Length: 472
Image (cartoon, rainbow, N blue to C red; front, side):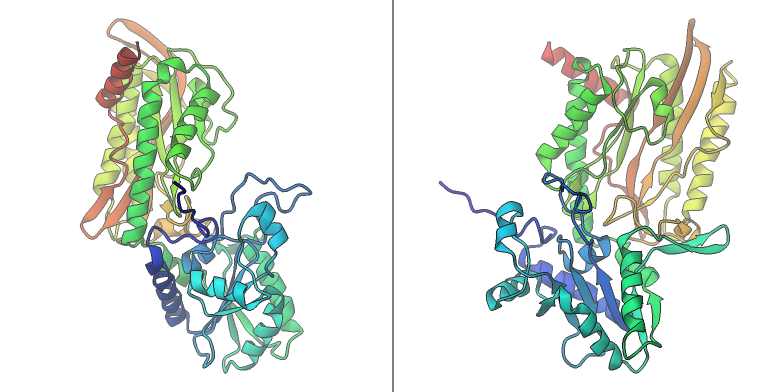
């Protein structure tokens, strides 16, 4: 029996919505046009991973510019979307390259133009009726600009304020596209055209997740949770960071064809005091803790989870004390998170809780500690959505009241050297602890989407102990 293959799943993400996905993306484009009310052009990524080098990495997937993905579902490089809300012809034009069957033999099916059958294919899958050659973009743009009463063109690039100054990201494809279009405008019949940034309006539409996004996020969380549980069950067989990374990533990838949210961080002992530790190449002893920062994608949504577990399968007294200080801070943040509250306020709750407990519990019980930072090591939250880190890259959103539908991380941490005597035993270790969940802001407060991922001391003890006994 032959199973039916999914022809377009690599280049079009329907978010599990099937044939209704086209309407969903069309509604998003309409809302953006209604909001901005001007001619707009959005670019996809210019090439796939490795495409800028002599030899492309054939095994790497393409991850689309999130704005293009949000508006079209298209996961293919070298595409441009033109939106013209005032046009009497077509309000949406999608530009793609020519159909290349020889390249499809190597890389699989791709959208393209050049013949009626290929154009009809793009129209049928994406729901966009006006499909043109990407080589014609400059000419079409100039024609559309010449018809605009107000010579304004909306583009998307990343900008914000930093230390009171307006700054922009000038190293990505969006800025390069802005430069290319600006040059084309200068040589056009409408050189007086003003270029404006649609970033703010676009994010205001994109960042609140809809029901389909939430469902896909929960699926990513479910797969990540099962991978974590299975890793803990087999943890007694693992003695190296790369073994843990390979095991948990393998479990996640068996559950999802959409890839990891990011390369996993597996940091044992003092390695966990490096926030973005990436080398994952050390062995660990059984008296150390292992920090795991990991997650998988489902469709275009992500899980971003951190857990810190004892390599022996059981927290010692100092590890438990420190771990539960971090866990209490995380719980305090979850209780505070709600519409109207800012992430800056969540930071105050988080680090205030940890610093208070370190002084009033750890120090009060005779412990001494030296932290790797002053007051706070990092922010407790970042926005999540089409990207695992979403929203403006300068994080000006930290001071903005949160809205229902936003998804944020909740990741308090503690990093440094700690020494204490508890229950007759001396403890002295350099370590890092981070516990991270993903919260959905709702009208009434928030929902912890990561609640299926075990994190209490009791849950971790039980999972690591019981499965070791079963294996034996």
